[in-house]
Length: 198
Ligand SMILES: C[S@@+](CC[C@H](N)C(=O)[O-])C[C@H]1O[C@@H](n2cnc3c(N)ncnc32)[C@H](O)[C@@H]1O
Image (cartoon, rainbow, N blue to C red; front, side, top):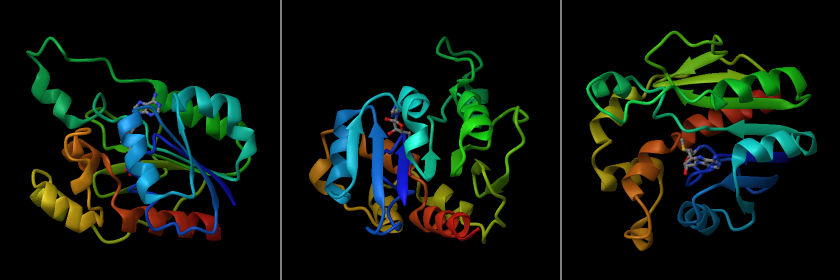
């Protein structure tokens, strides 16, 4: 399968997809893209704007996964009421959902956090702290949210839980943020396998 992995991060969602697919990953931060390339040397890693890449290249792929940035949708926004940095929710999330729903003929998944507002487009399914919009409904598996909440401040625990040793990248980028951003690899595998079976 030809797969497009947008907003690739360090590749949490992609970690357990194996090496039998032709995968293109797009990540805008070069230091983060370097980490991804280290773990997935066979993937075609592109340092670029994923939003524009999707618009131009979606026709070339069989399966598309996108994890657009979540901070402006997160419940943490509610703690920033007095903060000058309080931001509007980033609508690229909904642009990409509408785009794929309307134009893409293959299988797709867009992942984001459960937002602080009622989602403007109803998610296809939810799992743990995430909403998923997708070409297909899948039944959520057992919840692991508690584990994540317990470890989200501890880099070592997150590395263990997610199966990434990032020690050689410390100081190159914000490792804690990369790990917090990552989809749990088992969830990425579970969703990928079910959607590709349908
Ligand atoms: C939620 S994280 C992705 C997590 C990833 N799916 C994982 O499981 O590891 C979002 C990533 O998108 C990157 N990013 C933000 N804006 C971007 C853009 N316009 N184009 C490409 N990447 C972008 C961030 O640097 C960050 O690594």
